[in-house]
Image (cartoon, rainbow, N blue to C red):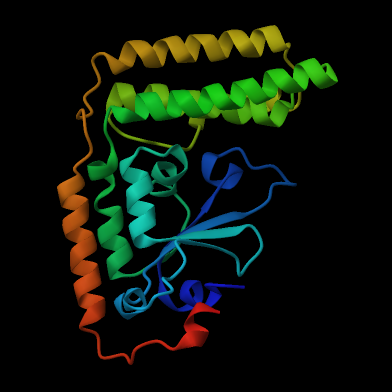
Length: 238
């Protein structure tokens, strides 16, 4: 598959995400792995550019090239911001450590719009399931609630924490379908309203620190361009 060598040889940061990182894992939970790789600068000198993301080579594994990762995280993409805050780090080199040191540079009040927008999309899908099948997919409802909790708390505190902590048991009752949809929907509404209220007085800056992130990216590219490794050949992209 394209890019697998990039992931194997140039990953700077990788972690476990999903239920295991959120503190919601059960015996049957998958292990979702996410990572960031740095494509050698020389690969960008070709007509065919390196991939911006790669699936695999492992099961449930997905990685982004550093520049694409930074672009999406600066847009307050929930999945990428949460990836930077996983408590389950599996690989970290000096570049990855510097990336994690920039976590606060990516956070801004833009999370209100992006987290809320993503939540609205998921709610639309859940309501479609109810119309079509008579019931929601409770696992999806649980993860929507988890996202709304995360959005509320980051707007209140300025810090993104993805482990659900004290909310674990209540969320798992939702996953098992032990609550009514009306009850789950009421919880969603309360969390959404709380996030709206927190956004108005959030300690987060209005915009992310794009200049700080860009400076980091440029330094990484320059270091790669000056490396003594030979220019990667075709198999690097295979």
